[in-house]
Image (cartoon, rainbow, N blue to C red; front, side, top):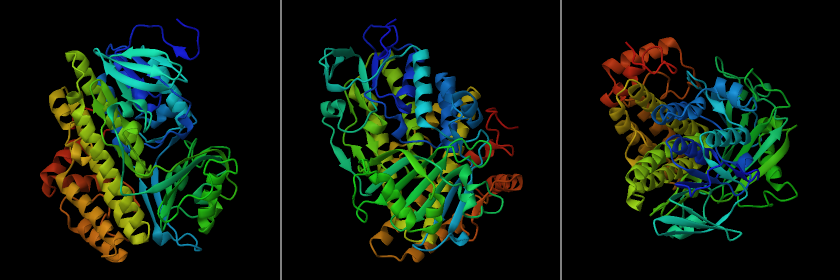
Length: 556
């Protein structure tokens, strides 16, 4: 084995698959492919894990990690679904995600309970906030443990498909031949150039500035928690204002309110048209952090939360929403950050990553089995990623519009929450079906219509509601509808749609917190059996009164 720290692994034969990048998507894919006997080479160009997008899991993300672990026999990925094991076995520097908070702010005014909303996450396995440097290092070690080779500080300048392989030319002139290349690194790469992929901008333009910060005051010390809810610091808190939002999430919050020595992530998202770039966000003057503080200062409660905060690391993205016009070619694939990108609001990044790992692993293993690496084998992934980009672009566009009014934000957030519930139930059903030995049925449910932007089955009635909500926000942005009228229309749909479960007052704007209780669960099961549309009944009925996140067997 080589002793060069930039070369890890002992198989020096040409790799079957070379993956560009060492983030969570690249390493998870490498774990699976190496587990199934492929020679895998990971090429990392630089250490960027501190600014990698994606820290928070949702129940749908964790259920998908369980599905991946079950299907591909990769328990390393299954561990990511269990917040307790993450803290014990991966890194105590991570944190838990027990609540999603939203507080709408008016400039110059203090915290108003009437403009706050809290969704307490009903997760059997617990949700996590990953500290990405530790997560990425752990997953990289897992990939190496499975037999993948790794080379660090390597930049690919050219990629050419020829003679039954791909020739990768590195910055120093070295050449590597590989059977297939997957690029997860970002836009405008050598693989993107080889495919002739153009960067297509979406309609929603946001600027994002982020920081890892010490000394962030837990918000429960600034404003009271809603009755019955977890402390604000036990999850991700969104401070929403007209034209943007500040997301705050704490690490090392396993045992309650985090200590002042614990890091937190602070991420500012701004409507780029209304708030164009000013100071260099990553310049020596600390412009990025100063811009975050400037927007916080307009809202006293946010300013109080950040008054003693000190950044340790900042990053910025001016890219807005975008996707690559092409993502596949013979023996080449753009995946995740090489194929699409945008605002990290509402937990998009890790959920997108997990879906793409699941789908790409299936298609790559099938291509290896058939020795057919033609572009046609990967068209589903291209359509799926285009669907994901369109879905997220419309969600961010709606969020920017909804940020202008607390009631419209509340209505839009409830529609999003309902969608995450259906996503989680769909994936839970797939996991139970797979564990029960009905693999064919489970696999069919995990090859959904790519135009929906998700890889699994969805509820048709929910798709209609989501489309209505996004269209209503678009009408508001165009000035054809007032924000309060738009909110009222969405709330009416939430109150009257037969597929909306009675698990929470989705259609009642006075209901400010979602806390799942056993009576609510039982009431919902009774509703499902008597009133729910068939698509919802299929999801809710197998879930059972207990939920059963750890037990993947069928309920009696």
